[in-house]
Image 1 (cartoon, protein in one colour):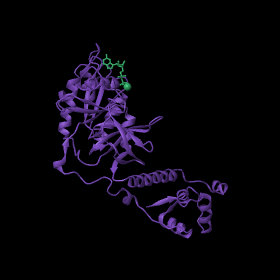
Image 2 (cartoon, helix red, strand yellow):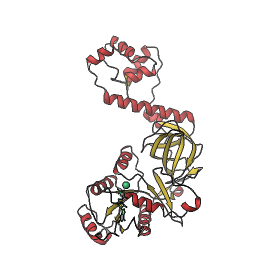
Image 3 (cartoon, helix red, strand yellow):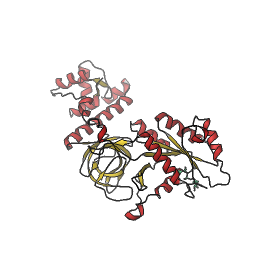
Image 4 (cartoon, helix red, strand yellow):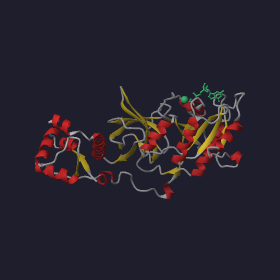
Amino acid sequence: PETITVQELAARMSMRAVDLVKELMKEGQMVTANATLDADTAQLVAEDLGHSVKRVSEADVEEGLEGAADKPEDMKPRPPVVTIMGHVDHGKTSLLDAMRQTDIVAGEAGGITQHIGAYQVDLGDNRKITFLDTPGHAAFTQMRSRGAQVTDIIILVVAADDSIMPQTEEAISHAKAAGVPIIVAINKVDKPDADPNKVRTDLLQHEIQVESMGGDVQDVEVSALKKMNLDALQDAILLQAELLELKANPDRPAEGAVVEARLDKGRGAVATFLVERGTLHRGDILVVGSEWGKVRAMHDDKGQQVKEAGPAYPVEVLGLDGVPEPGDKFNVVESEARAREVAEFRKRQRRDKAAAQTSGTSLEQMMAQL
Ligand code: GDP
Ligand code: MG
């Protein structure tokens, strides 16, 4: 049901919450500023106070934002988006760094590595992989809790000298809950006490059956330190991607999700976007969560300015009016007016939700406010 807090209703009528509380009391409604009113009551009160009311529902505002479904013939293969998970010190960061160095164009472009929360490696022959470089289960869960599921494949890193540990188990349950396929990277095989087979056997206890154990989960022995067998891991990722038939329509207004966002002293709000479908262009107007903006500039993980970004290509975007949250969705819209309308509506919604959670002010507190 539609509701609004007394506070918010007061704000929209440009009056003080205490004055509105008094008005409501005159009508026999004993409420506090944090109380929520149903839409009918709110409308009556507002009209009594001489305001005209236009009720806008969530459905009205969000209408058409997502755009039509794509036709099968417009779908083109896109790179997989990969998240690396595993126990602390098992080599997630080392593996991410090692993978990054396999990019064939990184050196040529003369760019400088930028940590923007995600990067893409180009392996040549149209083989590309996108990595989210915030390993860590918290980031993954936070994004999922906001409705964003950008990860296609999880690389589960397990150190061959340590085998399954608590955070390995945690990663397995995250992957299972999200329904994301796992590839096991058995790391640190260069170490004298490495025992890859123990890892494979231990995984059975967690219902992960790797191929050599008769299952269908791919496993690859690697050494992030010695950069051993990284190509085999990449082949495994690309094979899994093929099985998933990852495709997107690049020829439509962009939509996707925020990977990372922060406030930069000089540049204002900065956010890394991962386009899920369509192509994002410089100059595009968009809503992202409860913020909006116009893409003023974009650059990739090599620090190169880019004019457009297609599916699974991570870019850092400048030009937003505020800092969105990781996992927030973005949609390109046709006008600033539309972007502002949606952003403001969502801001109010978030405020109302927050207020509803903290409501429950006692009568004493209410009297004190008066
Ligand atoms: P994270 O906590 O999972 O990100 O792990 P790190 O990447 O920080 O690695 C933890 C430690 O293990 C560091 O000292 C790395 O140098 C070391 N390490 C990572 N990969 C390998 C490997 O393949 N072989 C060996 N011998 N050490 C490794
Ligand atoms: Mg690390």
